[in-house]
Length: 193
Image (cartoon, rainbow, N blue to C red):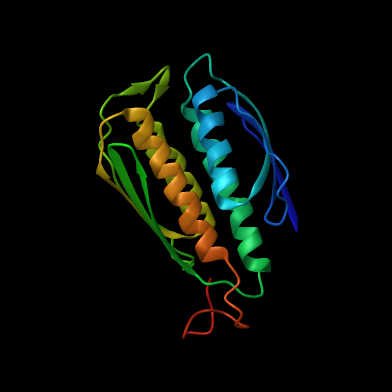
């Protein structure tokens, strides 16, 4: 099923289409090259097709664009989760990238919480501020109502550190969203809100 959201503020104009069942190549144009790269990797490793077009105030910096994309992706994921008939709920994944090791654990809990434990080796990758990685994930996790723990266990190369986190998140989400064959809500409470 396909989901689409358009969001316009004084800082960004975002148009995202997301499809959980479409393995076509994603098209991602955020105006922030490094973020395009990370979202392309996220799409590939999660199996979620993304069509993203953004006009942002990148002449100021990349903050609004990065955070707002996280917010909209989270809102779209929440819609998709509500429509799913069956899902595993929990997912965990480790990604090694040469010297770097990242772990992400995700629970589709309905209780938004982000634990972000990553100290990056450098403040920038190219022109991209590394502190924006946490802002992106906070926007996504809170709006999708996920509980997510992101841990950079070992680092070295900043590009590898961030890439490992995006890939580990994608893989943990793919597991959590996967159909476990059971019907109904995967909670002893009978509801995930």
